[in-house]
Image (cartoon, rainbow, N blue to C red; front, side):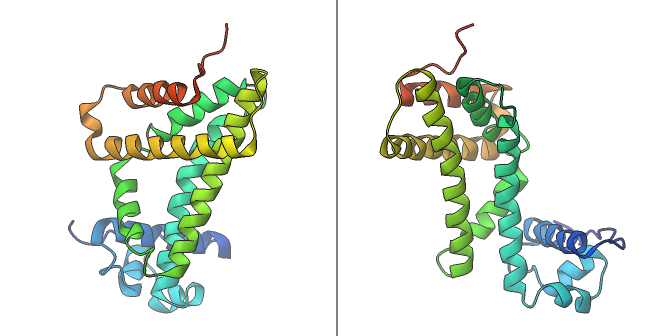
Length: 213
């Protein structure tokens, strides 16, 4: 996809410098692919020396692992931010969470490109597998809490085993629609995917996600 675009790498605290290098790694993976994402390529993208990168990352594998974690964390954080208001009803919180996972910036071809590149490593790199598992478990636990709160609010509390079962189904549904949106988002009307997701989750749960009012 053309030459490597350089980032402006400013003097910053250690944590910010590390995050700048992680973002530069993500840019390289997206534009160049995993094989071409070398220490030299990341250094060029970030506008720093190879030696500075080695100060923060001992190997290319470590850079890739942190880039994958940042990708997963970023997607989850965006959706979690929609359920921060504690005064919203459980139905509203679950509805907002589903919609956020099926809307930009989570639904984004660049994010899909990154995810597809990283996912190819989870069966050959234990660290990548651990990151994938931890991200999946974190996401599913959010769904379990939201589903549990919804049923409790309706006066129909359910056991943990049922919350887990519903969360697995909803997670699979979100994954499928997210993939559709990233691959062919232009063929869907605005808000179509969130509406489909909410409708499908209502079917799974047998409960509306609209407030009574």
